[in-house]
Length: 136
Image (cartoon, rainbow, N blue to C red; front, side, top):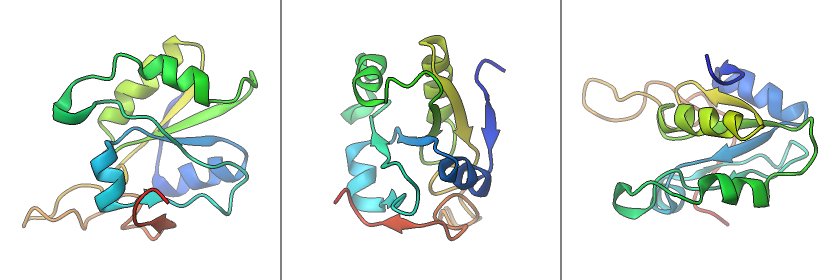
């Protein structure tokens, strides 16, 4: 594995309570229309850095944006989340290569689709972890 590891949504929450920072790599549209993780109960606000821009275009500034937004503390751990846990793997690998300690949230924010295509099976939101609608 080329990053620190995978975490269940509840394990990710525990890591955030220990001081890690959540990095949501979904798109602006996903943040606005589906919601965002609410980390007010932890000591760190999440970072919002798109892995892909509108139209699925890769964000060529992803690492630069991450370096500008993430704390410069050498011991900071980053926990990456996307919709289903796939883009966040790529983001965790890239961040690790840039020198960050990086984890991926299994299941992502929305989780897997059920047999009807609705994302109600698992994920951050469906496991009852705190969320807000939109980037307030």
